[in-house]
Length: 427
Image (cartoon, rainbow, N blue to C red; front, side, top):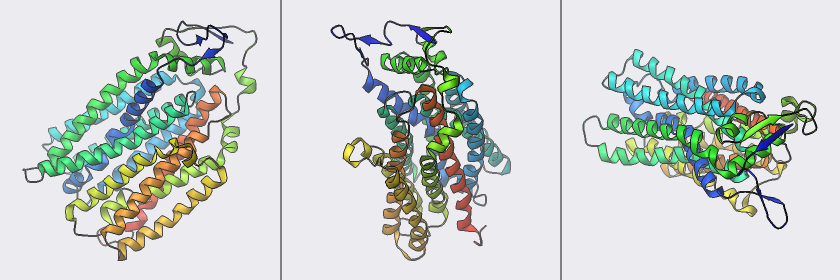
């Protein structure tokens, strides 16, 4: 059994003796949002400056190739981490992920400066290798954070997921501003790209300290982690120690994790519909975004702005949609209804095909916005409903398994995305 010595992790009501949750919920939600932002801002910056990479590497399909390089490393790393999640120090895992994000983003910036913005196969291979590093960092952070937050309040998960989407919306809006600011200047695309990478590097640097120092010491976070440890979770021990909570073990009574904790296979089978939901949500989305939007939507009145506007609309609507489930009556919680909603998104694939072939830019912007809206809404609904009814260590394991299915869907979508250009003359 695990016992605790802490003055602030648990607060007792003086009149009834009942425990109440400490204050600091809004602060924790704000930090979760920023950590979500940091979990994807670097990668979204790489996608958002795709027009710059298309100028440097016009024959290499950068948006598709970089994503294809990124995803296998993310999926394989997360599969390994999910298998050993009960033995892994979650604190060191998340810190290592943010450090890798910071270092990789900085190296992308340094690589561009060192080559003076020149293309070439060597530079492209270097960017691909760093893209693989982003995938590894994503597996460390996203699975680790979702598993960690599953111990806590659903609002923390929602804030983290909103931060993930905010990274795309923020980079898209900044890209539009830099495109206007540098449009008429020499090497305008490169200047905007460098600004993006510099901002992303700074955000990742802040995330390291926010997670390692500030978030760990919030009273409400200590409360939830202490509660998880009392239920048998061993992955929070380092975070509790960093927060000044001493833990000791004894052999009498308490929660026996070996006997009572459900195994990964049991958790997966009990939540297989949620796993399939997440897989299909992202397989459909990534079969269209961003490669199809960059390369297969034709030429329209917006000209060079067209792909930028499409990416921005997707990201903004994805971000907005992640707040819709906060309105209780608008949150979809029925397992059957979620499956039906997810399967109905398969209709988006022929819709995009015929719109690209016969429709104008207005219809494509509408469809892209709907793609982002449904992606964000369904992601939050599935991930906030799934952990209900499980104990501490089971919640962490389930969080890792569901994120692995999400990344599996992304990888499948990235592979399917190449089908759009089979037989194309430029392939």
